Amino acid sequence: MIDKSNNKYLALPASGKGPGILVLHAWWGLNNFFKDFCQRLADQGFVALAPDLYHGKIASTIEDAENMLTKTNRKLASVEILEAHAQLRALPNLTGSFTGVVGFSMGAFWSCWLAQQKPENIKAVTLFYGSKNGDFSHSQAAFLGHFAESDKWEPASGVKKLEKSLRTAQRPVTFHTYPATGHWFFEKDRPDSFDAQAAQLAWERTISFFHTQLDDQNLLV
Image (tube, rainbow, N blue to C red; front, top):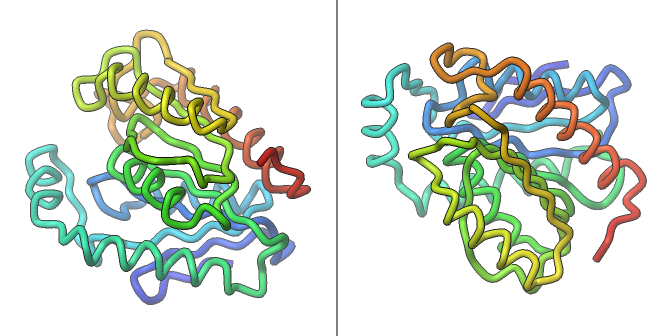
């Protein structure tokens, strides 16, 4: 089942029930790749909800994406992310009391933010080539990160700073760097950056991580 209403994209597993995962798109907008990603999560037994932070607008070029990001109302985006998370948690389809979040680039920034805003609810965070440092001392989440070896948009120094903050907060954290990859290596609709082998490995690690952290709700805290 797929629900495309209200500037959100919801994909449900065949069983109709499963752990909930919020999907936060990159600066391209909620395009077909991220909708397909939601469906892939649903095929693995998860309830996946993706808010559309650009309200139907899609960028196809870096220039367009940069322009859209510049015009983004961060206060409004933060409200919409919190509302989407609340909507996800309120769905009768969810199993368990906790949710996960996965974000790509800009969405990874917001995923870190949400983990700090809702530490009592978010139990699993997956980041794709994006980060946001901060205070994770109240977080209850485990963190998985997928980063490119050569990435002008997400410097290794920022990744290391985030990892240090998470370890200081005693959060379970596993960050992977994929050799010979660049930003957007996971996104197959970015042929100049997509790396099929790295993307498959990152996918397998992500699914294993979410199943481990959310299926039985027996999480490290």
